[in-house]
Amino acid sequence: MTTKKKEQAKVVSQEQLADGIFSMWIQTEAAGSARPGQFISMYTNDGSKLLPRPISICEIDKEGGKLRVVYRVTGEKTGTEEFSQMKAGDTIPVIGPLGNGFPFEKAEGKKVFLMGGGIGVPPILELAKQMECEKKQIVVGYRDAHTFLKEEFEQAGELYISTEDGSVGTKGNVMDAIRENALEADMIYACGPTPMLRAIKQYAETNGIECYISLEERMACGIGACLACVCKSREKDAHSNVHNKRICKDGPVFLSTEVEI
Image 1 (spheres, rainbow, N blue to C red):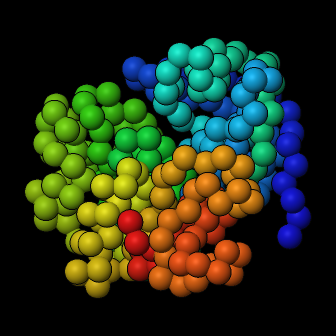
Image 2 (image 1 turned 45 degrees about the horizontal axis):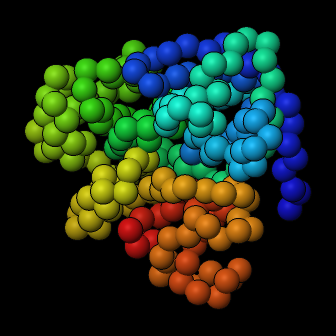
Image 3 (image 1 turned 30 degrees about the horizontal axis):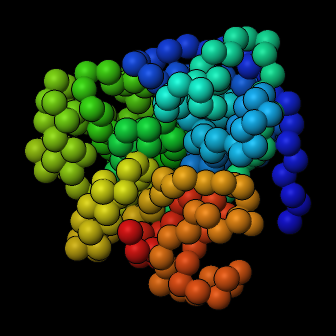
């Protein structure tokens, strides 16, 4: 296996989608081999911040050699705040694509849920664009009426929205949207916060549905060396010989029955 090398990616464009949510297109070699569900590690130009920020890939333009990332600014003087201030033509050090992706080829001929919550919404977009299946049901959850990427999702499949405050779609979470709309599926692909994924995992196993989940976790190295981002697994990890999986290296996408969350 070849080791990914850091490269200087060029910022193509940037826009603010909602309060604290930004979208950035970058020119990068990573676009050539990226898959839905993978991520890139983005470094700041601040020498005091040694660790990169793992950011999920939102869209892939292989022909143009570009990737789109949609991210949340997590606070002042953070790496994500620095990213949000970048303009077209600026350069940013990145490594990628990293991790595994969603096995979307398995969905052919099936009815599918594509589920995202919070900052787990963006990686669902490229998955929806590339997936070919019998019925594509996109179920995404937001805090409020700032339903970023809504128009793009509407072009990619049947869209169902839940909001915590009830301002758009179903009041509640993504599972509430499934119940309210009496939706059914043969397979599930999901990305979002742990409580959401835990509920989806339980729903899938109760109903005998094959389910793939992308775990969110704080990462350090992003390449599986430091063991900072592990989750409990049913199988022993060959690297550490314990019941752990490295989210950055073995994931972030797992078959739901492989991991305990």
